[in-house]
Image (cartoon, rainbow, N blue to C red):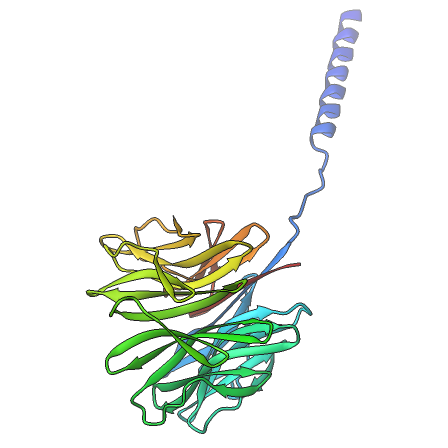
Length: 353
């Protein structure tokens, strides 16, 4: 009898130990939810094909898409550049199409503003904000697919070129402002020759690479130094490069096609994004102070087109076409954003909360 009681007692103690152990192990720990410390903005458009092709103007915030009205029931347009000022105002610049006319536009906090343009039309490409002033570079149409380089300051149009015969064609690639000085990078096509340029307060600087065709893709300032990213075509091969105060510096060796597509200066560091091809495909990359870093592995063609830096984090936008997908790299790690339709990304901007 005593032995049976002892066995029951042992069993009861074992059950109590098990229950106590389960209670401790199964206690619910609070889940640490990561705090979103940055907002990632990407401008561009989605293409819909339903008998005719329509470009829907959009931007994406942390992966969520936001449509922008063009006053034309959202038919055909593009958002080319995006930024936020120190007062947390969101600016998107681009254009919308109507009855054969392209209208340059910008959106401030999703409210649409149409920039003044000649009757033939125009485009808004890049934006820079200095204090309370908003500068937008772009083009005005001379004839169909031929342009004059222009910029707007607070909506007032300034022409950088004034071709009227359609023989010349000038476009812009970026804008930067320092004090009262306005710098606009761009390109001129004339007599089968492409020439990269920038204008400082309307005064033209040609950016050369021997006698080769040159193309500018972006502009940035470091103190009194002017940096312009771009490429030169030498013997049918594009060489990625940049100009510092009108002097060219190579980023690639000319063995394979390469292009520099955007530039950003952070502190004393110069970042340039683009691609360099291997034997078969394009490899997305960036150069930091001239030293290249690969972003893709070379198995499929990829390219980088826009860069933004938040703290020590580097965000680089991919610009290759992908059905229902946008991608960017954060510190070299690939991130994807699913889209409803084929998307064309144009610009990335990251802001700390």
